Image (tube, rainbow, N blue to C red; front, side, top):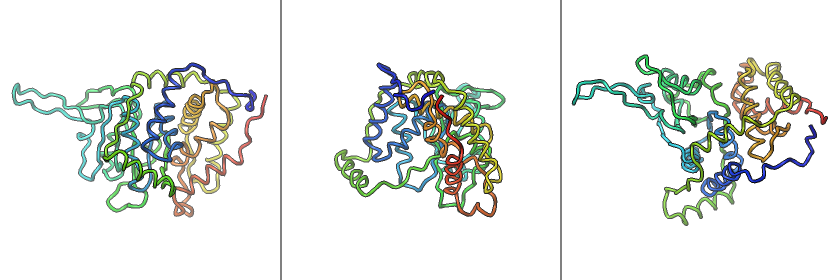
Length: 326
């Protein structure tokens, strides 16, 4: 495979054109974060969940709500608090006093896009209510298994600086997120544009145009599954993930679930760029958000924080040989 070959574009592809229109529409309101939006869209097309870990007020909720509106998906938001119960998320049976029968009252998890806001503020019992849903796309209520909507993804947020009254996510749940993203502060020019945009809109509520439907999202997910991956790229992905296990600052490296995440995200990255095959740059682009949250650092370097995990993945990428051109 010649990685320098002029990439074959998916000409006259209505789904690809629609996906870029979705990006353009959301970018009108989420200023200066095109790369973050692309990664969120890539996660959606990979049928994976996203964890936003960043400071308050950086448009994480706006991104989730805008994504749902632009893709025509059903959206629900749950504010996680210490007194939140699993039944508040998945639902429960309640007594109907008119006929004295128990009826299922579904929780907000029965949606397409679920925003789990400040997920680490709920105790582990409540957090675990999401595990089955995120992995199996189903929930169990009173020994009855119910399928969730398709597509279904969780967009969760947590504050990286406020730890009082929080319950850190266990590694098993962190591993369920296909990527972890940081939105970051806007530049000075972008912040001015945010203010100008607010003046022009005359409201805090932005109207996002619905450009596709949930059915088209499912169709795109199938298209992503057809993106070709050379065996040399598969080895490249494997080498990166295995290198995280041998890094001197890592106690536990990424599992094969990290390899699968890289595979799925790389294919979605390639498709969004209009290619029918994956190149090494696709793997590099998604490696940090896909792998850094899967690493358990050694105690002596843990204090350096989550950003150090990003540096470790970046170091690994720099040391792994890129597949040669055939």
